[in-house]
Length: 106
Image 1 (tube, rainbow, N blue to C red):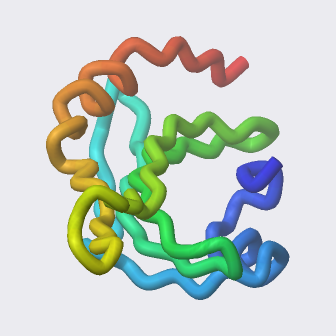
Image 2 (cartoon, rainbow, N blue to C red):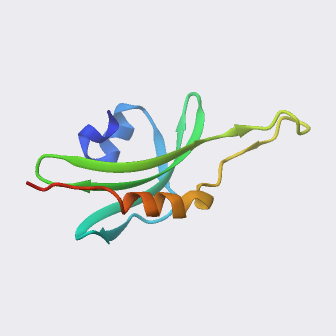
Image 3 (cartoon, helix red, strand yellow):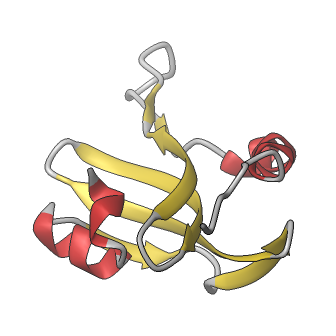
């Protein structure tokens, strides 16, 4: 649903998210296609989450691959310590997977 709008700022506004970039948005060429790569942390009324997204948009379609992580509640720790998941440990899996996307620009 979110990617139908194309621009992440529009989606964030619609879903009432407060997001900030964890890294500057970058571009990467994969199979002769330029993907926008973003990593963000967003806050919702249910708590924060992080996500990394590869996005490619042509004249009539949007292709995206995203990985999301929610705050982990560690009730076994004193005081209910919480941590944000580290998506960097999954970067190689996400990077390898996005290279397998078959995009038809016809």
